[in-house]
Image (tube, rainbow, N blue to C red; front, side, top):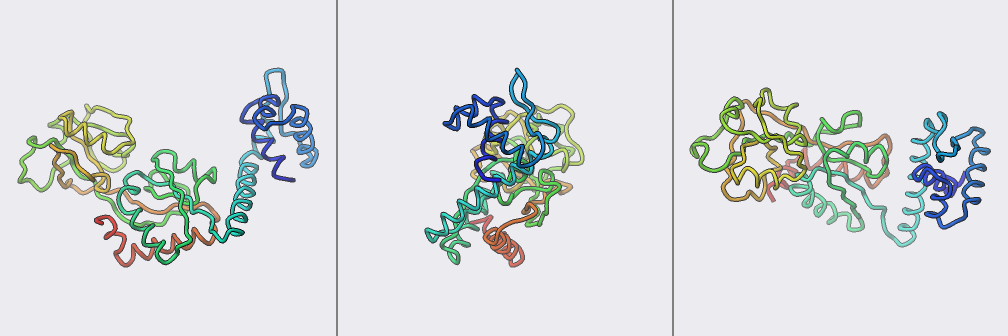
Length: 291
């Protein structure tokens, strides 16, 4: 089985048509059909359901699809790594992470790591809800996020990130050091589902403005303009806009941040993960947060 057969198979499923797959692959429809016939003959099983409506997967094809995606990704990585090694370069470490991590301690961690590993290269994808999908589809080598969104993977804790109360200035006595969760009911509350507040805070206001937002600064801007108060992890509260005050929450609530890994990783990824774990143990990671 060669890489070309897998590429043609995946493109056919993606487009749902031999002719469309041929157009995107810059070959003839007959070449696509023949390649698929050869793949099915090689495996001894029908993968594609051909009909006048297009091309879909047979039950066997549905079961084999995740493995074929994994195999194609592995072959692509072999070719990419071989090319980089021939040029004296390493394969990039592909990281998926929360925006709050990318804008707080991750840049300093990478810079410090590269001082002792100057050939290390990184590709970073920033997001919240799609980290698990990126890991499952092998589009990233490791994810930096919380336990809520990275269930089912090998997870290594790096830090506890406390939630804070965020209010427009003047709403709460500036001399106060903390806000109780019950106090939120006395002022309009902005709920961002991406912050997963429901799984961390014991009680939430019944009437809240829900904002589908994966941009921490946009949420802070809404607070600064008096739309309401909210609760956000401390790492998300950076570069505060004007007219915003931050308070500790009582009782304290935390999200657990860490590293999630697939079943197998290469040596470069293992080395960076070991570095992050050491930074956690010696307190360097906490220092990166305040750099």
